[in-house]
Image 1 (spheres, rainbow, N blue to C red):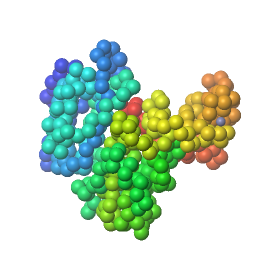
Image 2: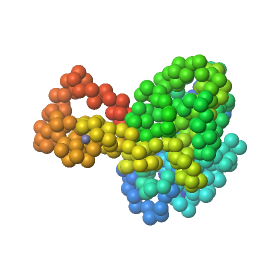
Image 3: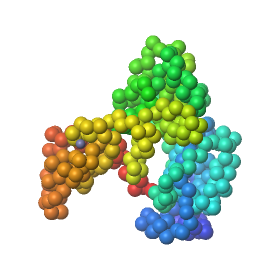
Image 4: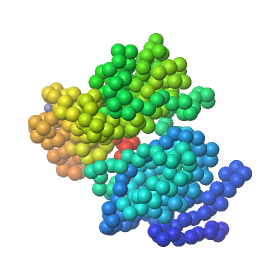
Length: 379
Ligand SMILES: [Zn+2]
Ligand SMILES: [Zn+2]
């Protein structure tokens, strides 16, 4: 069978196959060069890249068509990264050659009136080397929420709060502040007086937040998360469930901290904002809210267990790190110093045992970390 093919400037092959999906034919646009080669090409680039994240909830009637049109433009502009598109909107984290950034932003703004002027969060301290391929995926949702109520929609959302507005509303006695992130994020930093919704998944957090706040339908509910995308959905869900005064922090903690410092107003977020980069968190204030998971003394430094058979993400002080060679436990420390063969043997024999006696394997952090790693490896 012959398929029409074209080779673009960047060397990617744009290929249009006749995939029969129901009654219509859909073009498939994706790159066909192997991952390692793409990575090498990216590393050989001399032009700096700008890393930026963005999202917008808005109605997209035909996500596949929308995706394919944008793909052609972005591929031409040498955009790398991942972009999710769903009926409910778009969510992306990408890197763009610095000289193409304006063209990229303009193309995104022009793709739909709802995208015109959306906030672009440019990452500071980023070398732009995290991505080497463009992946644009059509998904059922841009943020998986587990909501199967067909009457729920993102059209009615909570009101945005800018940093100054947040500070004012947070002061009021009839205001409840809700952290919509995971426990390990809350643990090292959160807004003053914020309550935690104790679940490991966002899907569970939504109904749990509704249950926890029952009886407070007339109070001011402020929701927040790291970059705003989760709490924006949560705000819509609260409104859907009868809460009347729902707010969310515009741009999340990242934007709040930036604006509060810029405007010289009190910073009500204390401690560290956890982010998945090399630093595993950005310090917002000097407050240390967490404790070392080994010895219990005040500490908010996340680290990964140095034992390749573990890699648990946990909090460890510098003394414990020294004593345990950066491992989470003496067991991991011993294992790390075995010969590679012995390590392999131990790991092979442990798969069953660990599920029974070692909680770390079932630890929520471990799961999150694995998912995150898998996504990064995909590009
Ligand atoms: Zn310690
Ligand atoms: Zn370990």
